[in-house]
Amino acid sequence: MTEGTFQTLEIDAAAEDLYDVAADIASYPDWATGVKEVEILETDEDGKVARARFVVEGFVKQIEYVLRYTHDRPNRLDWVAEESPDVKMLEGTYTFSPVDDATEVVYSLSVEPNFTVPGFIRRQAEKQIVTTALRGLRKRVIGAG
Image (cartoon, rainbow, N blue to C red; front, top):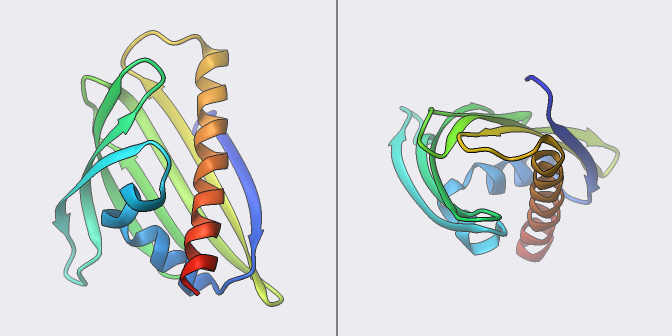
């Protein structure tokens, strides 16, 4: 991944449980801040999401993009956006590493919108997205367990 943002959070849950919530792409509007709509476009032979269309609340407008997913349960979930009118480049990763009775989750994200946004604002937006996603994931898993 090129320049971007990453953050680590230790969550009192099994890596499998965290991965399963993160890989349940259709449920993102229920817990991921800013995600307004998700449409599953393709699944792989195991039923995991391969492509999904997102509509998210941006800072200045709604943004639409399609992500392609790569799964490595329970260790890692990667995604990359197809180029669109709103997104030139977007790639991210959740990694899940067991630590004692908890799991260390690392969320990495790099976004380059297809419209002009100063670099500082883009990095602040990435940081906010990463922080709220990790908090939402923790709340979803702990609340579900």
